[in-house]
Length: 329
Ligand SMILES: Nc1nc2c(ncn2[C@@H]2O[C@H](COP(=O)(O)OP(=O)(O)OP(=O)(O)O)[C@@H](O)[C@H]2O)c(=O)[nH]1
Ligand SMILES: C[S@@+](CC[C@H](N)C(=O)[O-])C[C@H]1O[C@@H](n2cnc3c(N)ncnc32)[C@H](O)[C@@H]1O
Ligand code: SF4
Ligand code: SF4
Image 1 (cartoon, rainbow, N blue to C red):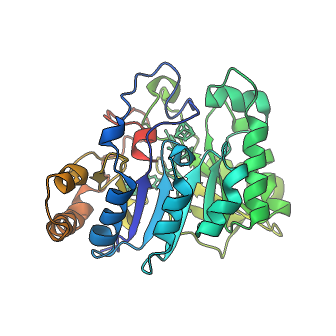
Image 2: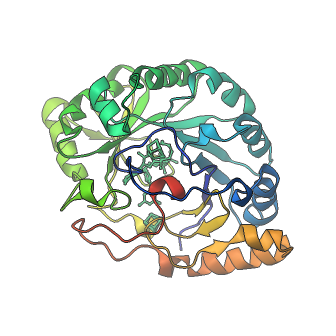
């Protein structure tokens, strides 16, 4: 059985963007009320007294937009300073990153993944649902700040959507040639926007690889990540190209992760809602952390059965009660 030691922690379900593939404008979302959010203290208690004892030692902070979480730098510092923490990373849209990139690094964050779906400002704004002042430059500044501060690896996430940003695949891939950046192409998953997903809203990774291969060639990379990406490289490039292919290639047999939502639900699989545990309510009702460890261990034992198996061959949207922004991606 694969070791499950990686926890994706959603710090907040709110976001300052409205990405078409995640929480499109106009979608009705019930935000978690403040009193339902795990407090910093509760989150740290769960990490220290429940998750670490049952074997988790790698943590990714996500959201919604994790940089909207109040006191996020302090939280990063607290998790990074736990002696058992072997890896602490964050996934962000980068919009609020530039001014606090250095503080996050100083607090102990070393790995950061930033979403960047387009190099074209108008396309970018249409993807993130922005109608006001362009937001691309501020995200780009955030990426540059993360690079100069020294985040390594620095990963850029691209959800490739037919007819929306697929014409930019080569331009985005080219970012890896001169810089040690890691660009990852993600197949659009059927959570969130069924209209955009349509009959088949994703582009198979192999199709993207072929376009890149035709232009520059493509080799397997020696650098591997902890996650679901298959990693390749343009020959001679400084960075790498990752492909997250949950629609066309099943990687669930190697699954090493669970997810904790901002309101304290532990979810054993991104694409399956079975088996979730409400840890926050139990904690608030006074259930001991020793008992919570037992419940999480039982869930870990069930996880191989829960792991996603009903692949729809990407032709249908799933019926999920929570969006990616609520789950944390
Ligand atoms: N189906 C599926 N998709 C995942 C899983 N983990 C991450 N993803 C997707 O992969 C994309 C990128 O996720 P990131 O938050 O950057 O994390 P990661 O790629 O696991 O991170 P690394 O630890 O850097 O490899 C997002 O669209 C996630 O939803 C997973 O367990 N299952
Ligand atoms: C939910 S976001 C949260 C973190 C942060 N707001 C961001 O966008 O990076 C985490 C990741 O999930 C990806 N994502 C969101 N909806 C998706 C979908 N329907 N299919 C595939 N990836 C998706 C985003 O592109 C992002 O890389
Ligand atoms: S993908 Fe990230 S930035 Fe975009 S709406 Fe979802 S949570 Fe916000
Ligand atoms: S879909 Fe579920 S089982 Fe498959 S990799 Fe993602 S979280 Fe793991």
